Length: 281
Image: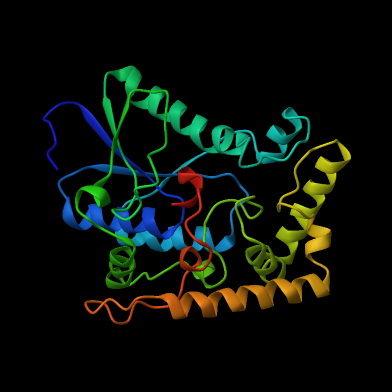
């Protein structure tokens, strides 16, 4: 990558997820000459493990992470959208709580002062199906992992070599972002219920409010959280998930250069899923 000698601000958004964290480590270790500002847009509905991991990452980077404040929280915006839950078809949460605060910050701090912005996004070389977040502002998106052929396994290696490893929530969840993210798979909702019961109950209350106001969506496609949390249903979700894990493990092709590639992850089990890059990378 080449960088012009002009007035440029380099920014890198963190979600608390593995890819953006690995990119921050990669840029710090390989491009120390760049003054990169790391930022995290806090929705206030993140897992405790996300904040813990960001604190660890901050220590490794040797500089503070700028926490952007959306000013108005999820519940406020939900009321503005007639108490309807967001969905894959209507992702107002990403726009209001992630993209808009980022654009406002970039515009006020840099663009209005004649400073160009390069935004570093953690799309990997093996993710041809994903694109960078599309902002209306004049921001140049840079994809170092794509340019340097960094794939998912290389991301794991970056995190392991740094000593940070994966965030703890990867033991049961495939994403960072809000505790009640509608992109969660059913087994992840079960994990939230068992590990963070207060967050699960909060999501149930929001869902009930939405349904009482005529929302066409539940958090989890095809069933409410009340239905999902029934003991018999939980047992079936777990059993179905275990079968998928075993099937994915049998199908995995061993890479002779990486014979020990770790546990089977959610993408291998369920296939690649479209997600909000600002929340989940």
